[in-house]
Image (tube, rainbow, N blue to C red; front, side, top):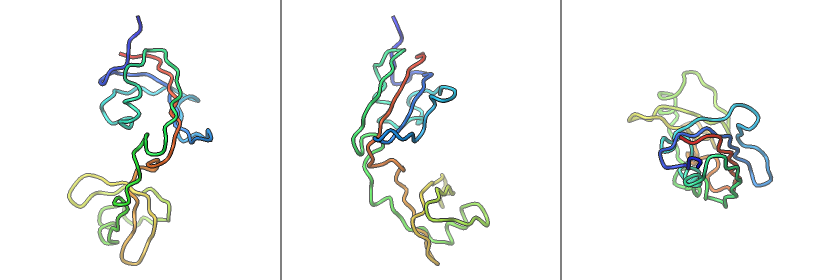
Length: 147
């Protein structure tokens, strides 16, 4: 009997995230498979939940409606960050462009990553939503091994 995915399983798998038209967003199928432990934040919780109960050897494609894979877009996660705060907490002398994913220290510890949407003299507007939040996606998995 094959092993079945549990909430704390170690997995070796190939996976692909793609837009609904089939355009790859990320894929391991062309290279080495991924090895990960569920429950550690390596996959989005909603994607992990789809794997629970699947037996080793499963090859399956899930079609997730808008918001099912990475949650809905949250307008409250579009935030203004002062230029001074950004400059104090990011790589020195960085020149940012609209659309850049910027990773910087949070003022009280931790890290933030957001997509730069607007750059003004005094503030930068960032979207801290997951880039796939609110979008429909295809999630393909091939479970090679389950421990």
